[in-house]
Length: 265
Image (cartoon, helix red, strand yellow):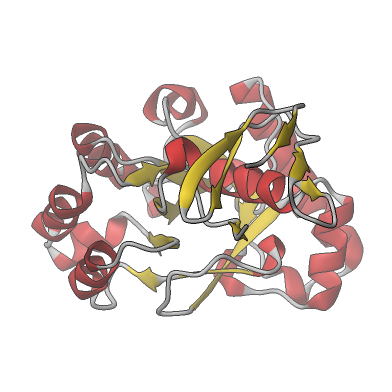
């Protein structure tokens, strides 16, 4: 019997997630496009910069309504480069951001992206202690694999990096893959190419073989799948998490309900 951890919810083998930084007014238009096509996004926000006119930041009162149905994630309270500041500054940047965003959403904020891409091993170690479960880097892989360490999560591509070509490659193959796109919505306004992201969303939307998810949904699901416990013969599996997980058994999708022990045949 061949067991593979190569399925997303519903037995799907593909997933798509989008990641955008800074909490600016152009996110409103981007979210309208995402909602139109059923795309899910994660938006990384600096709570200490709400309403800054020079950066066209959304105000605190706008946040919950604008990002409804999508994930609100941390990005540092004032967008400081974490690798360049003392440990006390890292704690302040992360925890003040979390506290304000959680006050707005009423939910734990468990994800983040590195402001200015600034990070090192010390930063990663501190984020683990500060309740951050994933953090996106600015470096990309050009591939569709899952990260070994979610605090060093590299996406597939920035949206300005041959996005449509990556989409064609992603759609062409029927195996386990995650497409992760990141950027800033103000870049579409600055480059006057909103039609570009519209074209991408049209291309990848409405497909039965793709799971459209936020960053935290991907992180939670993959960690639950990796946490499955198998017997030595791999004929019984225990799902200790509360998340329903799908696996392949001899190439066929099998659901393992949260909290259940299942005999495989």
